Length: 562
Image (cartoon, rainbow, N blue to C red; front, side):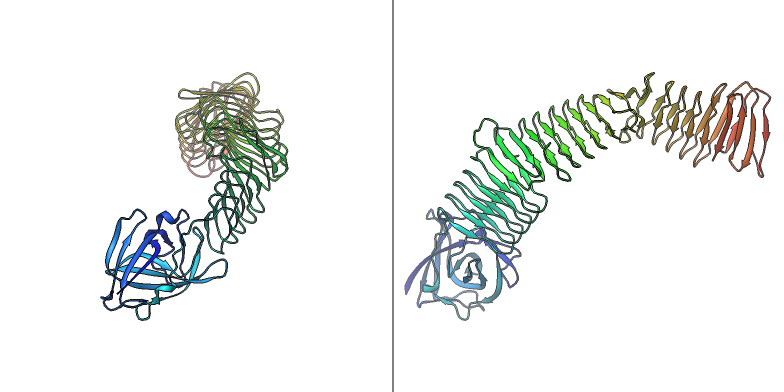
């Protein structure tokens, strides 16, 4: 009997899209594969044909010893070839991958040609080889180690290619590909699809082409040249081990990037999003004229500046400085004591945890406060705009106190206080909130919860929202709305004249503190007017009116009036 020795792959080294390599499935050789992971098959056979009986799963004339690169025995026993899967490499070679089964168990694979690790390939046909087999001379023993300065071409599927050392050229073509250049000055081209490209060490050139591509850039690179192509493409520096990044947009989608303390600078074009490091980053998109950038600073004390479009800027944890610039921007400080300026445009600004300084500039801005927002300072901007505090997400009770200066006051929730100026509207959350107005025309929406709203002097707008609210307009021509729930509207001597909307529920107007004569006239069910010394109130959606101590008169409507 003759002895035949050849190398192949372990079962784990072949990554399949769906179990057995049948027609229509795809597979790849592990991107990290090299000759150190090869298995050696030593077969003792009485002829030159490597086959086996499919009925018994083995051929008594064939035995094998399978060893790894260290010489250890992986398996031994009766052996046969199993399924033969035919595929075409990106270079056009038609090859076959054979199962090697020892005593019926799949141990590994052998092939009749060489193919590249990390490249996905489709199986065109698959047949059992037990009846025919192949000659041992057709089975090659390649090392499968990527050579330096190699050229690798992927297929139309989702390729994963590790080029290894050397100055490599990788073209992935279609699919959502993952490309890693390794050391050397590499050129990586993702082609169509949503690709992930990482150049590794060296001065690399990375091109995404069509699709939403991600470029992973660490601080061990000498200077990457990146071309995003069409789609929403991202520079991601989050793998930096020790340095922050300085990213400067010099025009729309283009600019340069340098790691702190490193002299080599890279360039980029066609970029719409940037993800920073875990250190102090400077990302400046002021010269970007696109429809909008997405900038995420991550951990570290970052300085982030948007462009002229509608940008989304997330500072991440630590003390960040965020500037939206022109456009309707969304700015998020997250944890840390942040300074956030919206710039021109209708911006949405969230300070997050920490003691933040928030400003909106000259348009209609919204400042979002959430539970645990810290001690913030908020400046809305020009008095001609409508700037809003949106604290509707608060679950703990809030107290809003408007001060004598127009648009100014405080919002306190638990241990957190926001001090605001030049704000036009305040919205609170689901707790039992308290609103205290000033001598100015204040606007407050208390949201859900059993709230207490008092307008003070001035033409106020007070909305109770859902819940059983108590609303006092005070002096001035106020607009009062109860919303859902059983609401109580309190009128004292000298108050009004107000416009009252009860809403859903049993709502009551209480004039019991009024000493002057009042005239109540119903014009429809729950609708009418109240005349007094301060003028005429109008009301809708109320179910009861409680008269005061004066000589009041009531003119009813059809039905039972209270």
